[in-house]
Length: 110
Image 1 (tube, rainbow, N blue to C red):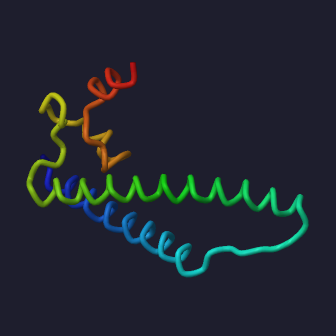
Image 2 (image 1 turned 90 degrees about the vertical axis):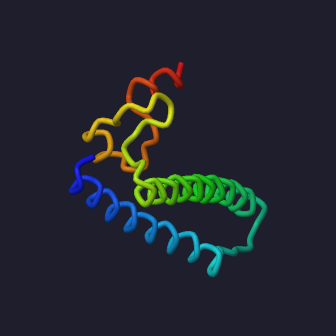
Image 3 (image 1 turned 90 degrees about the horizontal axis):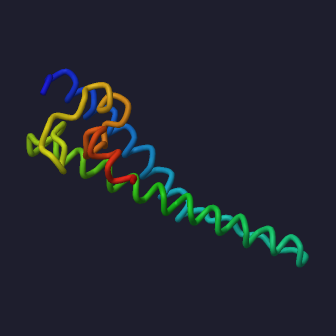
């Protein structure tokens, strides 16, 4: 695996990890609270549910990022977890947390 690609991926992953951690921590420290009429309350519930879905998605993404950073440390970054073949550099540049090659990823989606 190209050392520059791995280093660039590490820097990208670390920056994204920090962004997500800050966002998730901010939401815990400063949750939105509102009170109001029934319609406003229903809207608040809907927004709260969407917010929770977004936080769940961000938490899952954080796990993917941390896993990718562990793969860098272990020296297994860039190898498809399914078939073991190298993941295309273009895929890793776009999605440094990718765990599978395009072929294996396509097979999983069907």
